[in-house]
Image 1 (cartoon, rainbow, N blue to C red):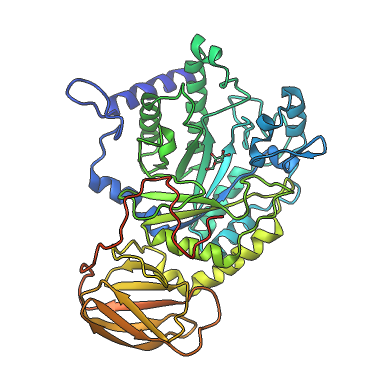
Image 2 (cartoon, protein in one colour):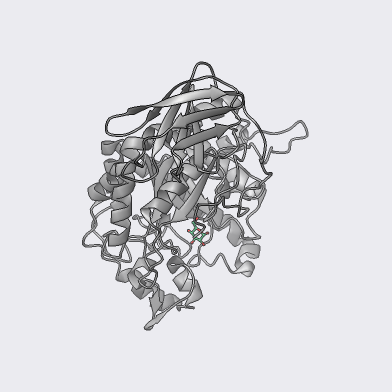
Length: 462
Ligand code: GLC
């Protein structure tokens, strides 16, 4: 029965595929979605701007250490980097007992930080599944013996707090032997792709995931055709879902959004994108990793990203017991305090096409520009060049907003600032104009591709 419905669904997604006149699938837009339909589907995502990424799984148990030694690289890679034998890693999975896990607290923390969506690793490269999958025993129930369903709890908490729920799913699977090319060549690939489809269907049907976030697309055996097929299959199952571009080959495929990682592009990429960053260095919990970014660095990162039309997906690597590392809690709390004042210039805001000022970043929403002040000018005057329009009002956002004196001249607007920089991180000014903001100078803009490291002055690249 199950087999038959899967076959029908595969046929349906094949029919849905967008083919050119010679019958080839459009690998860059597999279901031939119109721009208008695409924009409508992506609207909540582009409004959201800020989400939480979670890397949590069996690897969290080890905290980046194997046989008493810290294993180099990201902690979630420890099975591979530490050359941990299959049977030993099974024992690690068995030790995954998150006694302090509290889905409500996780999502409340995300919401209070100002985050509007949440993406969790449901199966990372190690292959261990964070839900009781009908298609494997390598999961939290059958192997680790958990008697509760963290994804169900998280999905419900997301609905409760108005946060969108997303699931990360790795194309690479060290348990399913997909690194073994012989296996892939001898028909193993079809079998594995079916496994992926079955599991992804579970994530949609059981947990109503809003985003499918793939990773591991760099494997040679995974092709653009495979990506297009999987993309069409998923959109057929849930038409409103959003899928990241790693479902196919990320260098070419940009749907539904690009995914620069641990880097922020130098400018608006011209398509929807989301930069994912860690708060320290590793994605998964790593005891030895203490390279925590400051809240100021994180807030500047968010401003910088939104000023270029992107989203920030900020990662937390919970401990094996389910608690967030203390250092991340402080940063998230402080970011939330900043977002309460400055969220106006983040949510639904976009890049302005005006060259980035030396003192900070600009975002645009409707008839307003938002000025994100990374540096407070010592002479008390804030100059914005490249604008040929009359500003009608400048307002310093705060618990109570403060109107500032503003004058517009040729290609510049000047604002007189209060003598004292207000307390808190990155002050923000809303600068209102009479009409739509379109007068801008393109000076100093650079051609930058996704993934290029081009960090503007004043923003830490850590
Ligand atoms: C890198 C890491 C992977 C992590 C991902 C997040 O690809 O190798 O472990 O999940 O970044 O984008």
